[in-house]
Amino acid sequence: MASLISCPHCGPRPKEEFAVRGDATLLRPAPEASDEAWHAYVYLRANPRGVHVEHWQHVGGCRRFLVVERNTLTHDVLSVADAAEVAQGGAA
Amino acid sequence: MRYSALSLLKNALGRNLGWSPVWREPEPKPHYDVVIVGGGGHGLATAYYLAKAFGVTNIAVLEKGYLGSGNVGRNTTIVRSNYLLPGNEPFYEFSMKLWEGLERELNYNVMLSQRGVMILYHSDSERDALIRRGNGMWMEGVEAELVDREGVRRMMPFLNFDHARFPILGGLLQKRGGTARHDAVAWGYARGADRLGVDLIQNCAVTGIRREAGRVVGVETTRGFIGCGRLGLAAAGHSSEVARMADLALPIESHVLQAFVTEGLKPCIDHVIIYGAGHFYISQSDKGGLVFGGEIDGFGSYAQRGNLATAEHVMEEGVAMIPGLSRVKVLRAWGGVMDMSMDGSPIISRTSIDNLYLNAGWCYGGFKATPASGFCFAHLIAKGEPHPAARFFRLDRFERGHLIDEAGAGPQPNLH
Ligand SMILES: Cc1cc2nc3c(=O)[nH]c(=O)nc-3n(C[C@H](O)[C@H](O)[C@H](O)COP(=O)(O)OP(=O)(O)OC[C@H]3O[C@@H](n4cnc5c(N)ncnc54)[C@H](O)[C@@H]3O)c2cc1C
Ligand SMILES: [Zn+2]
Image (cartoon, rainbow over all chains, first blue to last red; front, side, top):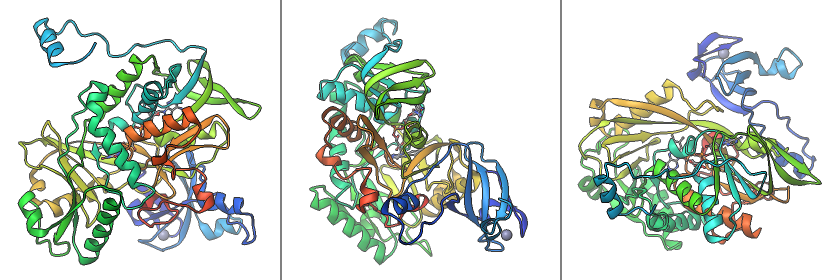
C-alpha cells in the first residue's frame, strides 16, 4: 500500500489515519428491489486484481468519506476525491 | 519409490544418488475427465482423493506457478479443530482425523506435531466465550479443556501474566491441535496424486473458461486449450479472478495476510499460543525459528506482501504477550493473498453452471482444512452431492440467509 493518501481536505497523510470501508462501485438498491439485487449488493464483490475504487474514511483527520482509486496489485493510489462530491456528480 | 527407514539407509549408503524425481512433468493432454485449477494444498488434495477414493483417474491439476507457490507454502502451519458453529466444527474435526492418519496414507512425512493449541483469555467475558466454544466442540465429540491461570503458567511460564491492560487469566486448550510442515503437505499430496496417474501441470495459468450450451467444455491456458468433463476451481486468493472467467461474481474479497519467522532458538515454546487480547499467535518450528502472525492488513490486495504498520503492530502484540520476544531477531516476513469470504467461512459448492464446482473462501484458515477440503471437494465433483461434513458450505447460503459467521461480524470481509 502506498504509504500516503492525499486527502482532498487535509493533504497527503499517512494511510494509517484512514479506515477502508470497501467497494465504492456498488449502488444501494431501492428497498423494494428484488432479493437478487439485494444479495448482489450485500454479498457479491468484483474484487479486481488491478485498479479498484473503494470508500475510505479519514478517521484520523477530517472524518470525511473518500472515494479512493487504487491498484490492488501494486498498491499505488491513483486518485482521491470526497465521496459526497462524487455522489453529487463531481470528479471521481 | 516407497519411502521407509530402509530406503533412507540404502540411499544414504549409495551417496543419495539413487533417489528418483517425486512426480512426472507431463505435457497436457487434449482432454481430461476432471480439471482442477490451482496446485495448492486444496487442489492437490482434491486430485489425490478423486483418484484414491472416488475412482476418477483421468485428472489434471493446472498450476500457474510451481506446485505449492501459493498460500500452502506461505502459512503458519497451524492445524486445529476448535470452531464454535455446527456448520464448521464437524468439518474441521473430519480434517483433524484425516491429519492424524495422513503420513501413513501418503507414505510421506508431513511432520504433524500435535503439541496443543491454546487460546488465552484476559477477561471474564472472554472466558465465557471460550467456554461456549469449548462446549460447542464437546457437542461434536471434540475434546476441549479450560485451563486456569496457574495451569497456563505451568505450561508457558514465559507469558506476561500481569500485563496491566490484558492480564492472562487462563485459556482453552485443544491438545490434539498443533502444526504440520506446510510444504510437505503439498509435496505429499502431489506425489500421491502423481502415483495414481494425475497429471500435475505447472507453469500453466488458466486464462479463460470455455463454455458451450451453458456447460464448461474446457479451459484456455498459457499452454493451450485443455478440454474437460468437469471443472473444479481451487485458486484460493485468486478465486474471484478465475470465477470471473465464467462470469461468476463471488462473495469474496482478496486481502493480504503477513507472517514472520525469527532466527533459530533452542526449544522454548512447546505449544501453539493464540493471544486473545488482540490477534497474535506463535509457535516454534522444528528448526527452532519462532513462527508468528496476526491479523490481515485490512485492505483489498493481491500483492503477496504487506506493509510495515501491520508488521509493527503484530510485533507489539507479541512483545506484550511474551516480553522476552523483544530480544529475538526476525529473519523473514512475507504475505499471501487470502480469499476472505463474506461470513468468514469457506465454500465447497456447486455453482449455477452445471459442471463447474467451486472451492474457495478459506480466509486465513485453510491450511488445517486441506485434507477434508480435498476429500469433500472430490466427493462433490465425483458424485454431484455434498459430503455430509461440508454440506453447509454452499455458495447459495448467502442468498438464502444461512451464513456461518463465527465472528458475528457481518458481511465485511476484513473483519472476519
Ligand atoms: C501468512 C499466512 C498464514 C496462514 N496461516 C494459516 C494457519 O496457521 N493455519 C491455517 O489453517 N491456515 C493458514 N493460512 C491459510 C491457508 O494457507 C490457506 O487458506 C490455504 O493454503 C488455501 O488453500 P490452497 O493451499 O489450495 O491455496 P494456494 O496454495 O494459494 O493454492 C491456490 C493455487 O492456485 C493457483 N492459481 C491461481 N490462479 C490460477 C490460474 N488462473 N491458473 C492456474 N493456477 C492458478 C495459485 O498459483 C496457487 O498455487 C495462512 C495463510 C497465510 C498467507
Ligand atoms: Zn481528511
